[in-house]
Length: 220
Image (tube, rainbow, N blue to C red; front, side):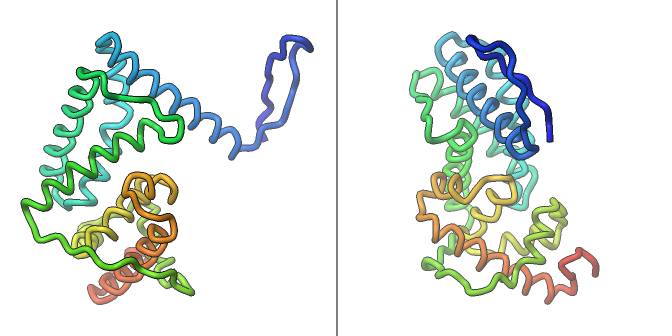
């Protein structure tokens, strides 16, 4: 537990206990609000510092997400540049609207997803499967741990690339830290569909890794 101190105008300083989870949620919320504010500042005033802060915060995670989509670091870097140019263009046209129901990160990754889809349509035949029903058990739990730990080695990235795109993007966003609700917003899919796609994808990844002689612990 963390000991927090909050000023209450009528009663002075009040001491309360804040759990680790609550503290993390407060920090995330504060950062989301700050990101929106920075984007609005960049849009309204052309403030370079505001854009640089947004860029420094989101550059690496964004490239990581795109690399999981493409399994090609060079292409991921190129598409990320397209995304940031779109951010600049949107601000220049005063078209960014701070939605209280969607964070700046959700908006940014929606741009990234759309840019990735456009590029993939040009480069490959996109396979999209029908909506996947909920599975009774998650046999991909071991793969889930592998993905969540960030050990996205070459074989796993290759396996992800073989997934249908609608499953691949869900796993890519989920492994980047997005909640099911945020993924549903970005992909414009029902929450149950997102959960089903993730579970089905992890099961397929588990099978492909096993066929390649790699266990869920990452050992050959």
